Image (tube, rainbow, N blue to C red):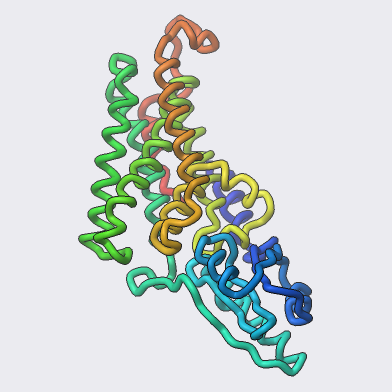
Length: 320
């Protein structure tokens, strides 16, 4: 477990280098051409600055360049790195060509979360709460209440989400506009938590207690590094960029971030992916409770791959 963890976390985060960073332009410019010699950009063309800023507000790009007015546009909430790096690269290129630049910042981070860390922290705690809840529920109820486990986990996720939302919002004031953001976040918190809980419950039902270990590896050791954290997905290696959108941690953190800092734009994909995990998990947990369908696990009594005590230890491994 430690070997997997050190490999995945260091692999994802040791080199903060942009790879195909989504970047908008409203026309060709030798300044942008010079910048591309120092950073990998995925160029998106827009008709004018208004359209470019609208795309930034939808979290489609990290910012862009308007050559007609030599203006660098930066979406501050998209990344902790890009708002410093991109203007610096453009400034250097413009200076070499004897030109002056203007800077416009959109989607500014609020005073409640000036580094943009709250969405990632909230998503991480919810995924831990999800697999912990499923593990402890299985240990507590065993097979006697297996067919009621789906409803139990849904109720658990709704309750956990409400508690977390109250703590981060009204109590700590960790995100802006608590009055308008509280209710959407409650639903999003619950969806992420139940998606992870039912994923864990599915594996536990299908392969037994070892399913907890597999859940930790997938969700914590691979899922969490693939979110990109405050740096943004564009600053991850290609492998991590590829797997993130298919896992709950990336979708959960992006969903919360876009709700808070991008006016709820570009969240359809995240809602769909998390809903698929929740619905598929509920169906598989229900079906797998019928023992005759689990032919690969046999019908005789066997010692489980790991003991309940070991399983509880796995579930409480301190994540990075």
